[in-house]
View (cartoon, rainbow, N blue to C red):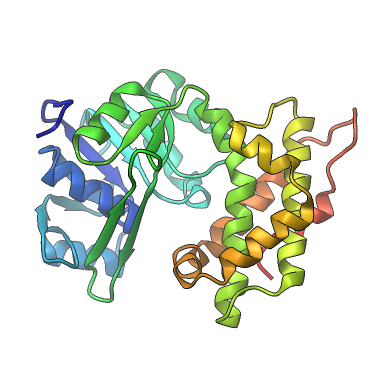
Length: 301
């Protein structure tokens, strides 16, 4: 029984991939909400969801929901959860601006969180980061693993944290969500890029690649500081203070873990787009400037 019951809501999940499917499944099965899951038009994933009339797990559990290929802008959804990747959001923003949704929760990495919120309205938008593992098999069935108390989905909106937690998805409110995302992007890029390098070799990334990414990570945090932001939270601040050699060792070791490679090597396009977003940040004229070549080298080779 949920400790924080939430009345049934009308929710749309924009993005039918592994993260969107996992959220939709839990919001229906455990949260008992009326969910519409929106997948890319004419995609294989849309066909799978329509065939199954919702989401089916690899264990055979089924959550029935409405499946659509476009967002109905006229529906006043209580919550619109956006789970597409950051580099896929630009063409969707006009519809998000026009739509009647009461609350829009972005749930992906972005280096420009404030601009994203301003594009749809600060008063009704929230930022977040999902913390769950989910994969789709060849038949479109989803496997979902949610974290414990130390692996909670983060959101800038307390009411969203309550909705997720009541649906069996550990979540908490993060007051500095925009800063958290800006400081997480460099690490996310390093993780995705080293995973891609390891996946291509089938046995982990080369040591030289891990060193390149560690240098790039250091340059990214210098860029963040140069923009006038602190490194947040404390775990990222500690990471920024580590010697490059230790960070490279960490990345190299993670790339040799098969589950890590399989989970993050799918983010190659996202990784490149996030690097471009960081490179587009204003050049700092005071203090030591960030090494932009080092940041550019973080793109998957």
